[in-house]
Length: 517
Image 1: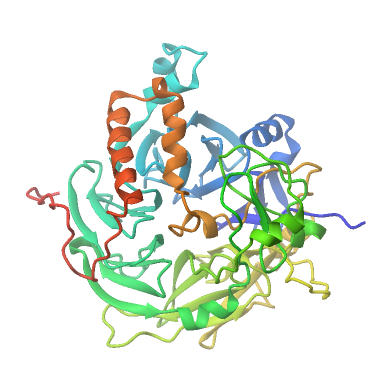
Image 2 (image 1 turned 45 degrees about the vertical axis):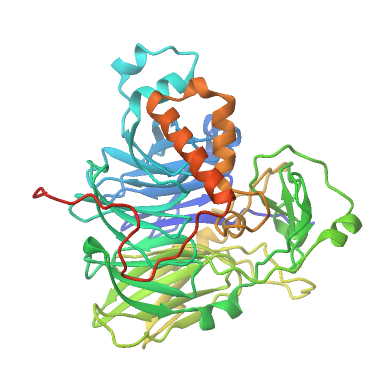
């Protein structure tokens, strides 16, 4: 029986070293030139225990200087690591389940979005003097001391960015909204970018013009904006190119918690409950789906099949990156469950939608990052995935290098990163543990679309958990909880979800910017 390895779900490519993370939270730090493993959480029993206890990785990011790494996990743990030496320098519990994270430019502050629709701000280092005066037997009390709630939406947040001058914070949510607020005075709303008809899951400033914002999600196009005044510029039509490459889909099963089903690719999706084997040789039979319901035993497959309903492929933009190579200004983006990377050239003003190209990777893309030196990109793929009924043996590639050559993205056979890529496909791989719970590489296909299953709302999970332990919330948070429960009731009653045409004014009264920031 062959050994099964964990795919890398996050990759960060620095000038000298790179960082690769697996879905269960393990971290590898490698030298770019030699591919040598410099630091690893696998070699520390203390860190391994912490990682097992925290559960699946929810997100990660690095600061601009590539000195710090921040990880967020499904148990709401926020850890800041010093990359050199791979040491934990701070560890705390977030207010709610986190969805995205970033550093400020000076790396002294961490910003986190969550499923409750809020953005919280945390200092890089915990204040030892303050926390020493807090009861040591409650993590909630400690959390409330060092966090700062700076803004909130009424829907689950999916992404955030800070402007280059850090005077504005841009946030996107599951209800099609992109909001531009002052930072750190985020109670002042500068503008909105409205026009998406489905969830927004990725936002990006092109490196050559940070006055532009590119956004994508469940719509058939990316949208380009002048974000400061909320002005829509044009669409980039992507669906015709993207949809044929979306291979990971799922069928809707019977309603209720603990229900299992299998998608059309043979990927077994379980709501709640531990997963014995999610990847490796049995990848076509098992895939976990994040859910906070009661854990139920696996039901008989014949019973499942009778309640399944075919669902079409879901378009959900995963990540957008910009490349500025000579005279070519490119956007490169990935899509959840798609086996290709996509790209196009853009300018500030365009009369028509630019042509979108693709490079077929062969396996679903989990993450990618670019080199600021060579323009090459590392692409992390789910090598454990197989198409249903496929008998073709795949080459053991968990990481691939690609480069923009002669107007196209191509596999970089003569890559300057070949030693690094070789290591990430061999010695740096981490064996799949005997027991592996609740890792779902394609959870976005469940959590992002609205009304996927009757009665399911990602924010409800947070509302319910807050109801159970109200003493863990501050007065400000309790007020927001009450408001969001009311909004959720309106959504359930069908009074929420009106779409807005691109460039039109938002329905809420806009707070005017009267100060020179």
